[in-house]
Length: 97
Image 1 (tube, rainbow, N blue to C red):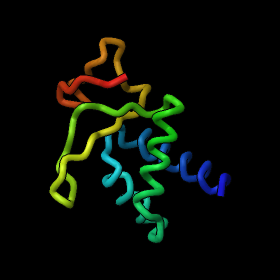
Image 2: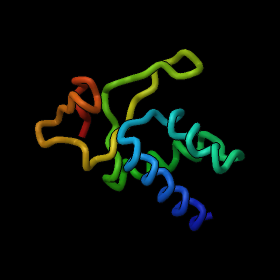
Image 3: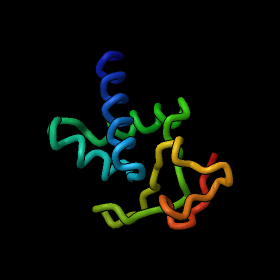
């Protein structure tokens, strides 16, 4: 299970390197294109692990999910400017560090 988690973390990180900013749901939709049985909870776990390890950063910017509820957007940490605000990636939303 640990190896599967590490492989999934690598996959999620690669997706964020290409797309830069995503909600967990948006990321999951990309993952299921190649791994249709992957539950969204696994993607959320990977995003949490990558956030805890400093690879991803949770923003205060939100998008409406398919369930009609607001969902936070994460961005790859390397894209976060030192000022803490990234207009290009988050449309002015403050970055939570």
